[in-house]
Length: 149
Image (cartoon, rainbow, N blue to C red; front, side, top):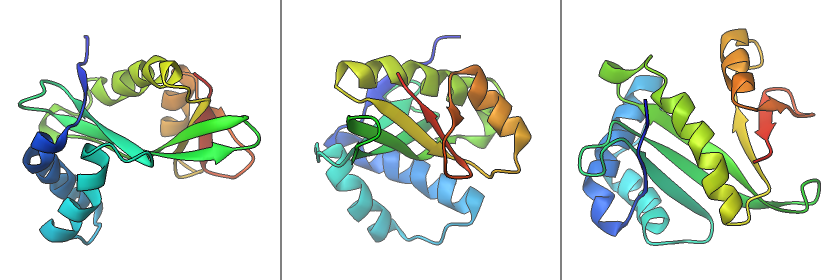
């Protein structure tokens, strides 16, 4: 399988907002359309604080990965945190999210990102093993994994 990743742009706002609404509903995050659109617009317009990648065909994506950026003394530069990653329910379990995260690392490296972090439930061994297969390792804080691209 080869997952397509596309950096979301302002004209992707409607399709991205629908994906985020589906994600928030699935995991029980209370949100409304206006709040989602307000949160997404800067990411799609090129804020230096984050980015959003569509997963799958750009005009009909099956998911997304929302990243935020910060500075790390430990990693001597900018790091990315996976704020949200979501794959539509009907196509989950096919490895698309895992492949997307795996393929994002070299893209981020080309843009100067020194490491990628993702938070998981520390008790979720299945998820820990899955992320370990694509290079994420435990960090000092329980539940935070990090991958150096």
